[in-house]
Image (tube, rainbow, N blue to C red; front, side, top):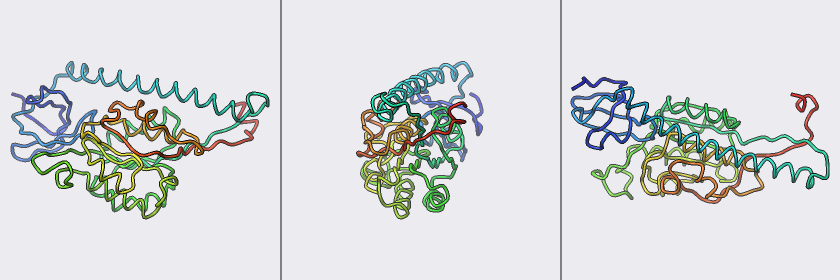
Length: 290
């Protein structure tokens, strides 16, 4: 048996190595794990872990890469249709020659995992969504969110990281049964003290298996996880990118949002909300030529 060390990629034999984990710390015979693709945090006995060979990791990662690319292509397709609709409206049904520009809603993304944050910001850039990313441990998020909102002035806030529902700690309607849901809830409450109106600041909060109902009651527009399932690291990105790129006079269709995610309606949900994109005219000639 391989010696388990911090930083290794492992699987849990009792779960047939269904999820790839990073070993983040070791204490005695127990390892703290964080999902490589899923926003899940877990403790596991060291003797239940196996270090995965590179070939196994690549096979597992390929499956998720294909799903991620499918989400991206679907998002781009919808974005193209929305852009064509905007062009039609701005030009009064193509009867007037008029160029326009768009200002997507700015996102403040606070993430408990620095590796995931890097992945997320890369996808935001790929989608053309403005983002200010910050890594903070979940327990520090409620303490820092107010000052970050004041500094960044976002239209959309993402509060995510890792979480888990622990059946042995209580019922799913008890906050004590969750690893980090309390911090997500408290962060949303602090954010709402700064921007109380949902149409002025759209908020997504949560991670794998998070206490969905409590997060929504705290004031979030969107949250995870209705069925206490795992969500993918990039699910928050595709959800809020849809909000960022939907015109502010339009409602964000919840089904349209969820179809861009890997977890779907079992892992993500929310309430009816407005988009945050604004269109404008005219466009400077230099911008057109570029």
